Image (cartoon, rainbow, N blue to C red):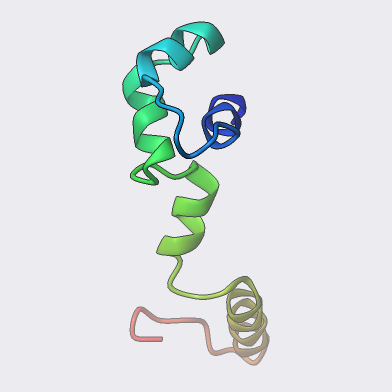
Length: 79
């Protein structure tokens, strides 16, 4: 994050090399480049983008399944 901030703090007309900034901040050059170009995202963002259900939908589904189980109707694969 500090490396990205360092790049974004530069003036638009300033040139930079990823390798120079990466060396100063002890990060890998290719990782810095991918993150700056938004090719790579954090694991948390990636996971949230891959979710089929929102957190609220997931909680509602769990409550629904628990209710059915209490009524003697355990979940099936087709559910």
